[in-house]
Image 1 (spheres, rainbow, N blue to C red):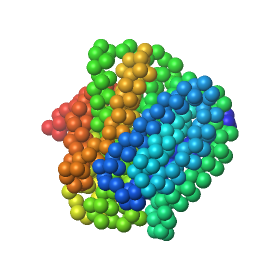
Image 2 (cartoon, rainbow, N blue to C red):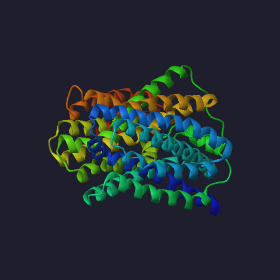
Image 3 (tube, rainbow, N blue to C red):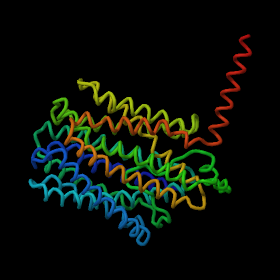
Image 4 (cartoon, rainbow, N blue to C red):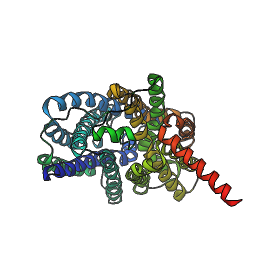
Length: 422
């Protein structure tokens, strides 16, 4: 393996971490910005949709630019733009101005997210083995870093604008310094979504693809299965989006935590998401993707239930930790199943699942904000409990031949043990 490829991989890690840090810096400053602008949770939910729409448009623009100009040009350029735009949400004092700032920041973040995912796919192809999961784990590391920095700036009494400007300036330097290590060739395939992890399956079909073997033929009923996967992706990513934008506010408004402490709610969620993503590939190889989705969604349901009902801050942190750990491995399994359902239409299938999932990511914060019109913030999380429970029950859609073989082996082993005991 040549040195330039290793350097490109390291640079990709840097950009993923940068993107996670920039978005996380905005997230941990949400409570302070909401208070300064003087808006309700419901209004904030609508403004978060504006950020998501900007990101969606940015993704479409960046995808075409990356194909035509190459990731080596687009990734650092969008990294600089996103870093510079970070300060914008920290400046307004009127809701309409905040909406404009979030639209611009969302656009720049979407551009960076898609271009760096496109480069990550190119690096993965050059490596000849799955490496995408680790990239997305570093995105979560960026969220943890943002939580630590946000807590520090809040404790020091700095305004959101000052803290966000400082982080943005550092981001510009990082984006420029890391540019030379990127691969010069333009990738031929872009990652399907901005905020969700790209396909990281370790099943036999993925291994065969890397090995150059012919994949298995597509099964009948693929279209219906794809839309079922897409519906599950919508539910899981709605939960993730809700946690991203409402976890800090939950601790601040429901449990009365200071802003410096509330920032760690998102940091806890992001940290366990990182741990889960780092472990997901090995767990899938051992237990199968269906088990990861089923028990992951069940764990997430337990976690958000604790958040919903507990009056204690330490229990809330535990709940957010379980919620992040449970959700961490769900989306990659859905994307992987879509990509391998029909090798002749892998890109189209993944785009359907990722597209509907991204709708869920956008809708999550807005739906929670709308529900706060009728009930307390923590009570709105009952919706997330239901979505996680439905996902866990429906996880059988990911059952593969290897899962069936694994189940037969366990049954055979159990019978042999039973006979041996007589």
